[in-house]
Amino acid sequence: MNIVNSLGRFLFGIPMAVFGIFHFINAGSMVGMVPSWMPGPKIWVYLTGAALVLAAVAIMFQIKDRLAAQLLGLMLLLFALLVHMPGLGAEDETAKTMSMVMAMKDIAMAGGALAFAKLAKDTSGITS
Image (cartoon, one colour):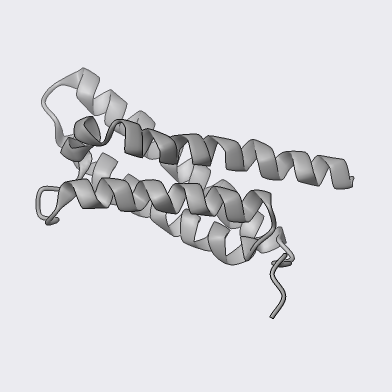
């Protein structure tokens, strides 16, 4: 069962790390996704990219994994609400559908992160 748990950590963490890296590689094109009322959109893209990478590392290597998963779940819910839900009012049906798909993806991943957080023992490789 330990192998399955370890595999699950990496199957969940690796895509989060890749999404985070995409924030750095594609920052210019992601700026448009930041709500217009938020100042410094490029900073938000980089900040959320870093948060995704750090959460992935914490989850995969069991460093404050419960806290990391809780914060990741919250961030993903905020993405769904602030980034994708406003697109549901778009005139273009394709844009509206994509907004719904992306919102559902982030809600599903948030659910996975929060379920993981509930099960995590929050063991830490760091000693004080």
